[in-house]
Image 1 (cartoon, rainbow, N blue to C red):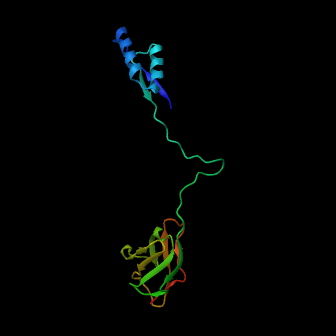
Image 2: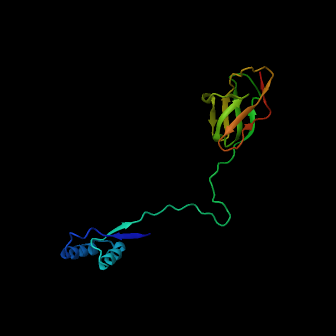
Image 3: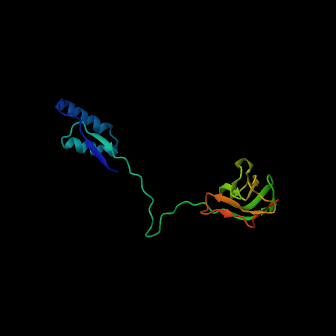
Length: 163
């Protein structure tokens, strides 16, 4: 910690005032500041005021060539989904891990209405199949999950068969 000592203008201060103020400073300052005030008074500064320099925040440090750690979320994984055949409005259940990080779901590139998504703990998510523009019964369509903690989308396999 650094401390700087400055003085008030001295052109209107009398010697008696200086001596009186010097005694008040010695009496009122805490022991930490007392040495700086006494030093200033002994060196001819009048009305010394001690100002503390604000501490600078410290940057995270790494040891050697090891980068400083950064917080990460575990990746979202999918183990299964059902049913494998569905039509508009059918509820799909997806099982996996870290599903709380899923931010968007698509069926055949059609976004799933957020109001139909239900997160059940961190291992199960349910949603309603949206209306597929140009959806052909018997056609196969990808279900895709976008997650905050995965760098690429998760495409569920096998593709959903549209009924």
